[in-house]
View 1 (cartoon, helix red, strand yellow):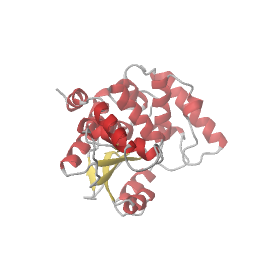
View 2 (tube, rainbow, N blue to C red):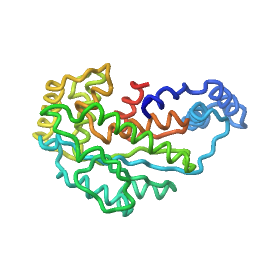
View 3 (cartoon, one colour):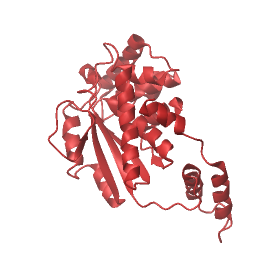
View 4 (tube, rainbow, N blue to C red):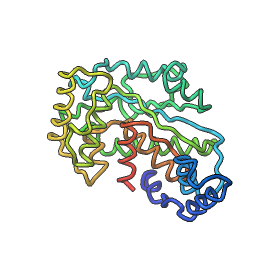
Length: 278
């Protein structure tokens, strides 16, 4: 049995009993009912995830999946592709936005090279490279199904290893020029919705570039015809290694019964993939 199959089989639903006990405990605190708003929902959700009524967070970690995307050849980003490599390296120097937020929140960072073009000579970057970037999804499948599974399993492996080290709350992150295009393609395919509805300007495209981006995504979907009922088919045809890696991180968190935070559109897409797989 593969690591992915094993992880999916070991996932169980949220603990409803723990959720109800948590809600009852919160309502019996000396305070007006519901007065702490969303915080109460989060506390109960945490109980459902862990199965424990009392939850304390001791160690936090943001897992950042870094990879290049072949579709950059089509001009879907205002940024040069080599920025993926530069920013990936900068994560280990503590000079990015996520580094500042992580430091403020006392969280560690795990930087994973899951498919960046080129090589790193940096011991702070974990090398799990599937390939030197994906292929151009406008010319065929971005990756093989085997590569998609391997990338998902990298995410599962990362969470498994970090849980063993005592981490009990995770954040998700990614770096990959062109990955808002791949995310939009995956989202449009799985939800069977219009490309225009799920495509944004990414890192500041002009109107002309934005039109090109949407046309490129539509072309990739037309050429590859991903099967919305088969997540692995969708990821392999129009996804990215970073999306697959984050998908694995969500699966790994569910397997280990630890909370994991979604941070934006790309990780929403990865979370949707994980949900559809299980």
